[in-house]
Length: 79
Image (cartoon, rainbow, N blue to C red):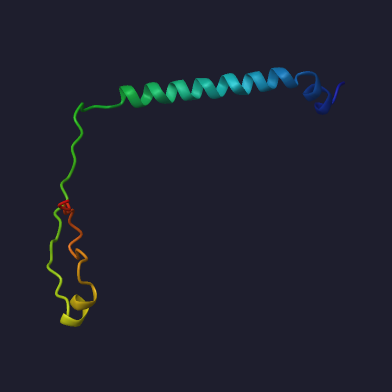
């Protein structure tokens, strides 16, 4: 009676091909599950309300950061 190691050595290529085919089947089934499980065609997004709070800076801090936009808004420079 041949042992497990001998069977593994004889059928190594078949085992690798079987695992590869099994993994491809799992991926294809997963793709079809995701495609067909969508019940609603539109995506509903909840809007996030931003809390825009004005930050108060000290005069000393404002003197040190002269020329830097503290609100992080894009400003186009005039050439």
